Length: 195
Image 1 (cartoon, one colour):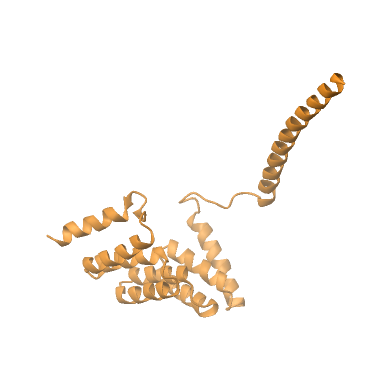
Image 2 (cartoon, helix red, strand yellow):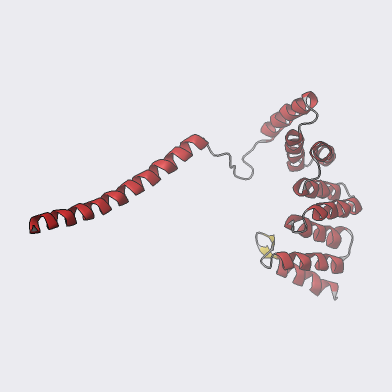
């Protein structure tokens, strides 16, 4: 009887060890399968796409929207390429078509507003940021960028600070850039606005 009891204890211990091993192997196999199915990563380091690659992509997307002018995703991608290559008027056209074909979208509106800023049209940029915020009152990039336009292009740092404070109400840890908190940016403009 004692012999059977020892065998049961060993069997239970072995079962627990085997279960842990099989769970670990299953996890590793699952991760491996997911990575294999996902294929190569599409994430690219900044600057890793060459200008020629973007031109090729833009040509393909231009052809695509010529064939299917209602392709919102293609218009948006085309706008993004023009945005990244500083072709502001072309980006404005592409983003406007994306909005026309796919309806209002806060991210597209925000990018469009930045392009209006780049073409020295801060008033239209502000109106476009406001359109984005009317769709999504918590869309943080619109607050940040609207404040930048107010402070730098419209010379209204006090209004910019109000916009940024509204953003802090949504996200107290908001960053102005990777190296500067929004609080620091507000402090900078407050200090300079008082002088």
